[in-house]
Length: 90
Image (cartoon, rainbow, N blue to C red; front, top):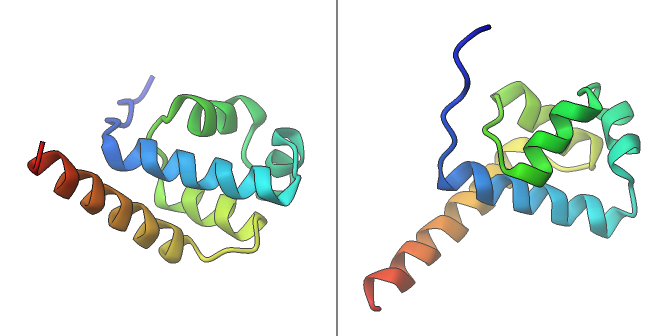
């Protein structure tokens, strides 16, 4: 086995965003798997468990959802920054 990717906060946020977009689109997990070319079990790990994903996986999932990978990543960074700002004032 290779080294597993290290999961961080940004990975969880990316997973949430992509799963929200998937849910809004009405596309099933299986349908997204077929459209993105990512195996169903791996896609479940990413979207349901917040596992880290590669740049290619981000791009493939976003493209299958008619989105740009870099825009999804940018939204994740903005959410993370907002969460960190809120936690500073607690």
